[in-house]
Length: 271
Image (tube, rainbow, N blue to C red; front, side, top):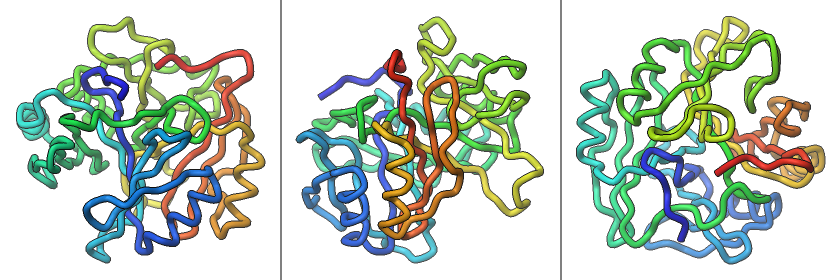
């Protein structure tokens, strides 16, 4: 399996009311195949490699949503930093058999994310390739507190977008407030970025919570969006061009939101 730098996104899963319906939707949309896990979830594979997991919600009050996990080599210490930095720990570290250990937390703006300390399972076996994870970003109204939080907890180095120029995935228009994250020990900038932070503006309903949006690479953004609709999903943001390719924001047939990105032919994102 691929090794992950500390604090890099290493896994995504989706919590759904109907697991079997989710397998049909993503199996048709992305061509994923599935293998049952030890509990009410299913690992998703592309070309025989792990790309994600689908899980049946155990509590109807839980959101129907995609979640992202960040790699850590010391989950207990990371949880302590989350508390010290003003975040909330939702699930304290718990072992998942020999696979590893996980925890869930929320940043000061309320966006939920996971932590993963690898055991036998590192995380993605396929990423930055078609029908696999390629990017994540948090949408928040508390940008100053959230920026400081991720820098303190994960050591992220921020690169603010030139608001007069190009936009990063999820921030398509000039004038947006967007920050790219690069892992500690790297040269900050687009070539090393592994995620980002955007701002929920007054153009959105006041009740919209902070959240992470995760992206999957696709070969044809328009075709994928159309296929999602035919499968019962919805288009939240129709396909549009950005300097990093062509993207759309979609919902599956149970309401979980995700984005797809068709990279430009001449370039690929750095891992």
